[in-house]
Amino acid sequence: MTQGRVRPNDGELLIRARAGDRAAFSDLVRIHQDEVYTLALRMTADRELAADVSQEAFVRAWRALPKFRGDARFSTWMHRIVVNVAWTQRRKQAKHRTDPIDESFVEPAAESISPERAAESAAVQGRLRAALQALALPVRTVVVLKDVYGWSHGEIAEHLNITVSAAKVRLHRGRQQLRTQLWPEVEVEA
Image (cartoon, rainbow, N blue to C red; front, side):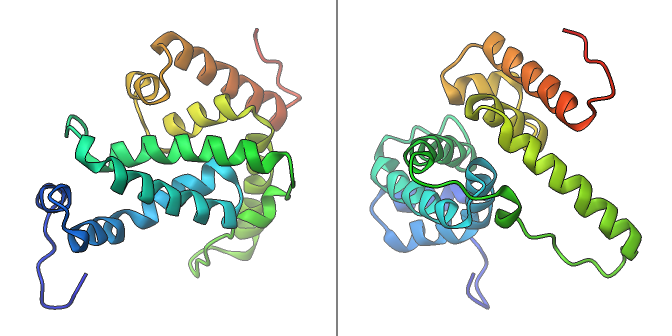
């Protein structure tokens, strides 16, 4: 955002971008790039791959912008593109390399957290990341979209081209697998 300028809303930018205004699309990219990258990182657990996914998602969005009907918010539409690109890229990358998930995430520094609390949080986050990474990609995608982003079952189903029932089943299985991995001493009902 440029100093002294009021940031236009997504609607105004979309109208201009759909008319071919590259500057308006650049503004949309600047507004949404952090959100897009964060989702890509959560989907791929790899910083470099997340950057590639983000870039490819914005390229695909630019190309598909004339077809964007505006039924959903731009950010929701971008989430769908990111998920699709991440799935495609992750499958390609899975054949060639495996990086530990702990190298993909950095704990933000917080001065208000005690050292004991920070150590406990890091340990729990490490276990959670490993457990999430162990989930199959379709299951992990539903868990992340529901539990991290707060999407409804209907939104998840629509964006992944699955039924609402399938989204619920994947979420249930994912949560069950996470419970089993994170708390093996607690018996999980089947």
